[in-house]
Length: 124
Figure 1 (cartoon, rainbow, N blue to C red):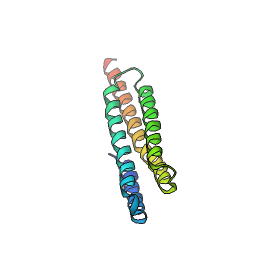
Figure 2 (figure 1 turned 135 degrees about the vertical axis):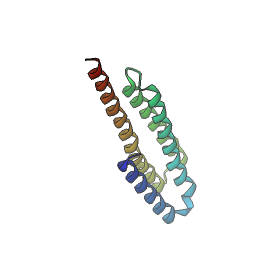
Figure 3 (figure 1 turned 45 degrees about the horizontal axis):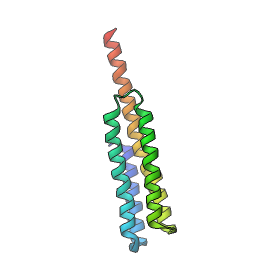
Figure 4 (figure 1 turned 90 degrees about the vertical axis):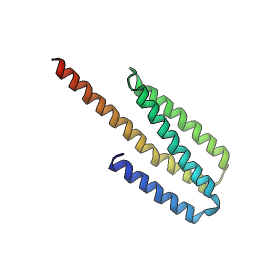
């Protein structure tokens, strides 16, 4: 984890603490929303690392992530119904925690390109 990811996770943790302080009656939903998204992103990144040798790994990642995001959002919207506080928290967690996942994948792609370039230079 790099500085950008750490700052975003710290910001989300502070944000979650503020929500838990202001709305203690929703603690189970707030914690569930946060950790379910975090765990799903972690699993998706691990899957991507396994698929990165595939020719269209980035496209596969994008498709899986899009599907995961839609399913996650719809399931939580079904659970929280029309609660404005939780809908706002859901949206902010989605927006903020998507950044580290994409940043990690982009960093992996950049590292792979450097590795590929180094291998080509050695062959020359």
